[in-house]
Length: 355
Image (cartoon, rainbow, N blue to C red):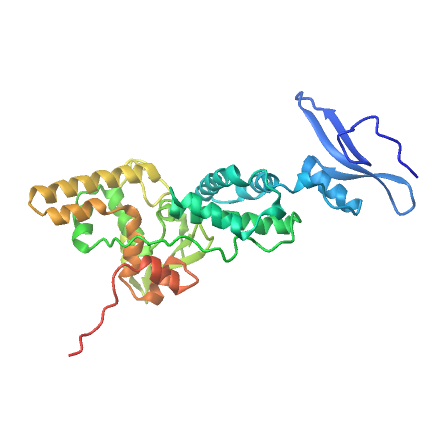
């Protein structure tokens, strides 16, 4: 039996309906439904949702048909990931992913998902590598993540085309903040920067995790940490066998210090204001610049040069380099020692000579 031609919603597939309603705010609400039947044969409208692309895909499932070609473009994967998954990530991760997706869209936005092959990923890598080799690796990793979600959502059944594609070679940062560099910068640091440097070194955590530490995170003789990037939980001891650890001493020093306002953050100015990433960077840059200038004025040009290379992010690798590998891996929250060894250990192993 041939179906009657549609007189409304002609842009929609057969048996797909559009429902709209004007809200009190003046905005128009729109959603889509499937004009189907229940087990007894009575007419029933099955909700397909407000997203037209997803509604067409659900319609195809109910009709036992292949999804329309236009619903399988990568741009819909990008859009859905940005809408549903990205908001659940940490702010820094969101910014990084958005940047990668913006670049990927320029090439893959209007490409059918099933048309993408490993060769296309390799071509993308080579083109991007002419300007940003390391960034290209990050973008391919983001593409791989999105593809895995596309498979979960039913956009494709194909193997991930990014799997097995060679990445550009990366050389991890190798700078090591030796004791003379550390002491020079530390001597010029205000007390809140000294606190941040000490706690960063003694806990081995990322700068963002150090800045969010609060007095309320101290429980049962330990500083409790939940890492932003991995959600890994750690309890870093403030005393062992009744004897305070160096971290415990630093935290007691901070707690004893009088402040105009008693804040909750461990890293705070004398006025009680918590340091954020920008104030931390400003204070560190100023201390480093002063330390380098003093070293240069004293004729220590090589030391001045090394001081200028020092970045706050080098403190975490310094912590990993100055304890044994097993302890360093646990402290940094790594599931594999290889990550600690390859990326964060910046001094060679200490060994005895032959004789």
